[in-house]
Length: 414
Length: 151
Image (cartoon, rainbow over all chains, first blue to last red; front, side, top):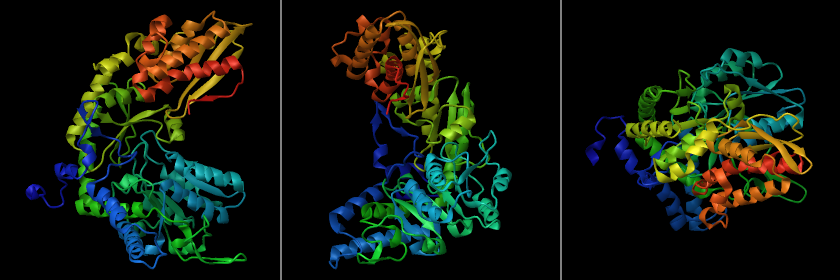
């Protein structure tokens, strides 16, 4: 078994698969082929065990008790924060705020940074490819403040038109918020260049990294972004935990969001002094087990190797793209040059839901629908797409199963 | 093909989804309602030409999966020249077949072509697809004008 990882830096997919207990099952009498990791990823045993070990051995509230368990829980929770800090190369651990997920991270920024900085007539710039979670919080803010939401366009391949984006950023722009990787199309945006461009105009940038962290090495200092948000559950960690990275200076200036325990230094009925970073933004008992599980997920990803994962997925994406292109009547949606391992497609005039149902009976799990990106679907002129998304535990056989399944779909709707 | 799939995608269903009947806004339509399935973004509008209590004409427009389109198509074919009460009664029986399957007191055979939807109950996430048109019909009959959502 140990000899399996022979080539250094190369991902041994069969060995990786053994780490994911859920993959060893049948669905409708067929081996499970899980191609929906962009919706949520599966969890390695190391994560599942870290969560149960915490509940079995260390469970206590954090930052409060004088007793040993509380000390252990606090230590493990803060250790998870440091793992996240190193994972995204933040300058300080206190720049890492634990939240429920990407959605909550973006809402936090909209409700604190946004509400104090945005005034009537100001503008927030996003792109046409955003997930609803990076549209609606800004719409709500704009509605409250009388501000304007501007939307940067893309071309027909799903490539962001960066020049057009640049033109939208003006003197009234208070924030640029965009995905690092498009969830529906897989497009990887040139975010480093975009951040530089926005900063030249003194506009801060929030990156939604939900779809990026499972696939690419992320270095928030190299990217230069002001905020970076992602979810644990797409990174092989538990659901219910996520991360907001924010530059210290900005987080310091921002008012707290939710009030409650843990976010205070002292409370009297006359006045409350807020806690320091990051606790100012972590009111109430946090998802301690989730944070620990996320820490374990990060350990796991680093153990396999971020670069090895990226290389494996790139190889798989190339293989899958070629295989799908050979299916007659199949149209890939999203063919940007720089892509993560997401394949959105249409098959003839078969509705994606029908594709999904037939594939499910073959044991193949894909996502069908609008991918929480209805404005993007409208831009593409489609109601929905089918989406297969690949992760580190997928192999060429999974792609072959998908292709065979799609031929079954064609038979049913011939 | 697997038997449950054959139950779901019966020939009649495929035929109605590919060649939907009454896929139009009938002339003189005086009632309409919009239905959406937020889960998938499917949208449908059901149009009625009501004369007193009688559905003189009925049609639908929109985009959807094979199940939702076929269900809408078969619904329009079944309801032409039926009274509001008859339409309500058919709604109840179809709904029971879709949600309760073999436990339903409704014998699919008495529903004519609509019996082709009797396999849908085996696919719980698809029940909403099949019932969207029917809920929208109800809204059009009630004349409330409020869009219907499956959620």
